[in-house]
Amino acid sequence: MTLKMPAEWAPHEAVWIGFPHLADEWSGQIDAARRDVAAFANAVHDGGRGEQVRLVVNDERQAQIAAALVDEGVHILIQPLGDIWLRDTGPIIAGTGPARRARNFEFNWWGEKFVMPGDQEVGAALAASSGLPVDHQDWVLEGGGIDVDGTGLCVTTEECLLNLNRNPTLTRDDISVRLHQSLGIDRLLWLGNGLVGDHTDGHVDNLARFVGEGRLALAVAAGSNDPNAHIYAEARARTTAFGGVEIIDLPSPGRIEIDGEIAAASYMNFYIGNSTVVVPTYDVSNDNAAVETLAALFPDRRAVGIPALGIIAGGGSFHCSSQQLPC
Image 1 (cartoon, rainbow, N blue to C red):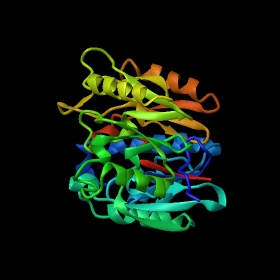
Image 2 (cartoon, rainbow, N blue to C red):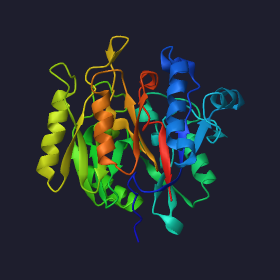
Image 3 (cartoon, rainbow, N blue to C red):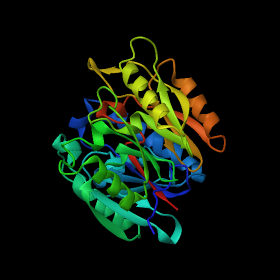
Image 4 (cartoon, rainbow, N blue to C red):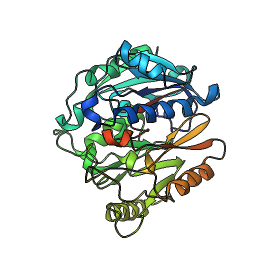
């Protein structure tokens, strides 16, 4: 039997979250990034009401820094890593209950763009520490490149999964077959490009996210200067043409710049925990609307807006830095 990757809203045993330690990767914002990540970890732990949080730190010095920022119940796990983006470098769990297995995919630094020691090893180490059987997958896949609703339906982007810098010998059909074999995905909604300024080559978790079975959140452009307005429009048109998917509107934060460059800032990079939905905020007018929209979509959880201008300086946000371990 092919095991399916559970939807993110399925119950979690734990979550791995990466903690920043490479100052050169944060444009002078590493302290702010650490505070953002710690606030995220605390919100997911939720005073013990959420899942176990395993904050992955590179060494003993980072463990000391993290301990001063997180709540007592957050577990600090020393495990060498490169960047913090465990959504992409960590294992992906298929199946639930006793049938669970950790799928450990190959990782090539987003097409050899940001090579850091530890990134290719951390996934296998975390998978082994999970206590689950581990299956190595002999092709490149990053968790941020896909999103699923738990029924076998997946959304992704052509810019990422068909990029020649990932799996140059695999066709679209090849990738579809492998996604089915590895994660039980049997229906693929292919969107086009990801956000402007996204160094991952268009990860879908910044563009579109499932918020229920067959329910897909898509962004609404924030005014005429939103740099992603045309990308949002194309994603909406493709989803409509695909059929059978309910579109849910989520605001866009609009144009966010860091040192004069457009950042891939998105409310789509929320994380669905056991008791909270954590939403990145950017000190702009749509912050409250985004949090309120997600609160209405997940009435059994508390929606929490957490400032993300520190973590976005490193190129990602809360969802990118985390990988859940479903029950």
